[in-house]
Figure 1 (cartoon, helix red, strand yellow):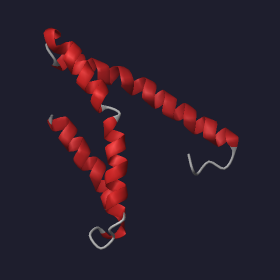
Figure 2 (cartoon, one colour; figure 1 turned 30 degrees about the vertical axis):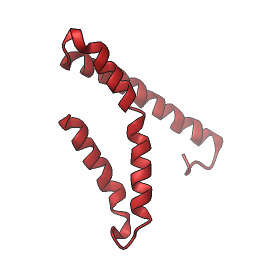
Figure 3 (cartoon, helix red, strand yellow; figure 1 turned 45 degrees about the vertical axis):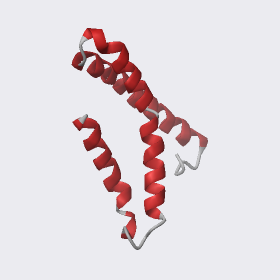
Figure 4 (tube, helix red, strand yellow; figure 1 turned 60 degrees about the horizontal axis):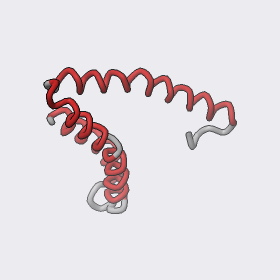
Length: 93
């Protein structure tokens, strides 16, 4: 949204995000409910809702720290690689 130069652009991007969130939130909940036995669903949803806000926070910290060491990771390529690795770990568990 930093690229929005007019108020209408901000609201258009905000609406696109809302549609995306509305389309994916139910699917994520259904996926958790389908893969966990009914006796353990409460625990599974607790873990899901506990881990969901932690992932973006850890992503931001890790990418920020990696960007501060350009000798280790030149050209900021870690910014694009890190979400791929995080998704892989998420799918594996």
